[in-house]
Length: 159
Image (cartoon, rainbow, N blue to C red; front, side, top):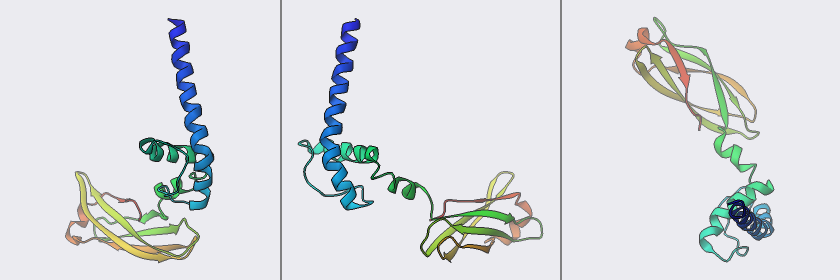
């Protein structure tokens, strides 16, 4: 029983070592030459086309070359904080939007006006921010007659 575990462990380790050594030599060079692209079209490194795409992206991540694109893919270019929300007698929300990138970028900031039973209304505002700039914007309700139902405002994912 113990010998079986050792054989399986050895087989797994050998597979991992082959996968890492086969991909890190070509993956490291293609990752650095292609920059942030996960789907580089460089050749070499692996004889199996099925495992090439899967293993290459993982080994590039291990070498650190794709560590930069991962946050930029998952991290929005800006973030927003609700300063004031709509509610009884007030049909708009005020947001403070801050750019998280160093270049000028136009972003859409979605906002959900929520009530006791979920979303009451939704709207968004498009804003162009310089790198690392912070600006205050107003988001009006589309259905202003429902302002009395609004209890809080939730900012969606900024694109």
